[in-house]
Length: 78
View 1 (cartoon, one colour):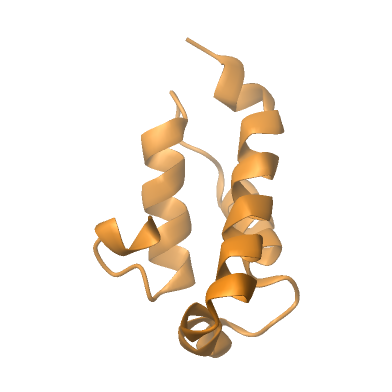
View 2: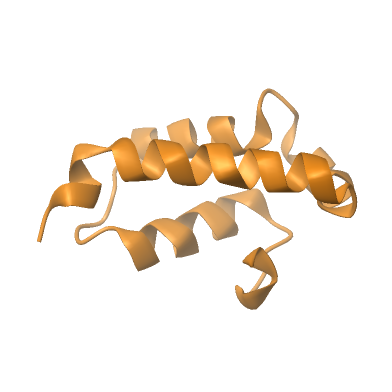
């Protein structure tokens, strides 16, 4: 699913594009960092490309990111 996004192999850009897609209002830099931490689960940014190669791990991390996103108050705004 994430491969449809341009530059999906860069966690910053992926978080930005997904939040733009799902949220009605832009998020703050602190919120963006929060979602990136969830996506990376403590891994450094440069590990994201390796994580993407591990389908199960990548799927789980993306799932956790989407769950956190849909639980946010911004998700429920019109």
